[in-house]
Image (tube, one colour):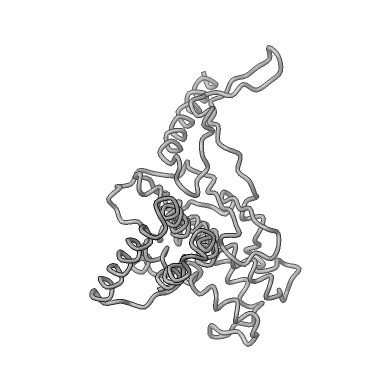
Amino acid sequence: EQDALIRSEMASAAAEERLRLQRLSGAAGWCQLVKELGSEVEAAVGVGCELTRYPAVYVDKIEGVPLSQLLDAGSGCGGEEDETPSPERLEHEMSMIKAVATSCLLAMRGAAAVGLGFDGTAPFAEHVWVQGPPEGARRAADWSVVVGEVEPLEERDPSERFSAKDLVRSALGEWLREWWRSTAPKLSIVDGRTPHEGYARVLGRYGVLNWLLFGWADEQLDGESILQLVQHGPVSERSAEEREAAQRRWAAFTQEAFVRLGPRRFDEMNAQIGQMNDGEISVDDLLARARYFMCPDNEDLHAALGQMIRG
């Protein structure tokens, strides 16, 4: 009787998880159902006739390792054996944290769009999988990040505005703040400053993570604003007239680009811009790729694109 109850509970949990994954199908940052096995509900374990069937969900293999194995939150940057990490090591770990923050925000935004959100504690560092170069990564785009747990997702009102507070208040957010608290003494930080020029240069490039590492107040954590900050850096406040003027310039630019590039290259430009907005590539990556299909016959258009993107 107990076995039958356990099996029933397992089947119910697997069905609920499969439904969550189906709702998140195609959303950036989440593990995905194996297309060919998405409808399978059991796994057979054993040899020959000694098979035992269990309720199951088949997901694509997640590459990389859990974040908790890549960063030492208790000892800070470089781990317990590195009392004075090099600026290069600090850059490596900060770029990883930025990639994790960006990917988790994009994943949470995708979940919010289909009426799902974390329960207040998830995600955990153990369930965020990271793949990237072992050393030398200096951009968030160098990393691949997947949120590997969907069970803690709960129903949310899809009209509820996306907020970064779920990430800041999560176990992962607190784990990353512990990493920073352990790292700061190694960098000789006093009153928010370090006397070491190498460290200062690195930290200056990652000020866009302050909302996460210092736990900003909920009212400062509008999701779209934080994503804009992390992906494109701080922007000065614009008046309504300035915003309207910028929108008109962008509309004029896209009209000219369509005429001069033609449909195929225009679609390629928009695809690259979409990847940048999703945090998959940097502004520099976008402009480098755009050069291939815009130049040399449209150098002025390429320059205009750079000016528009960089603001």
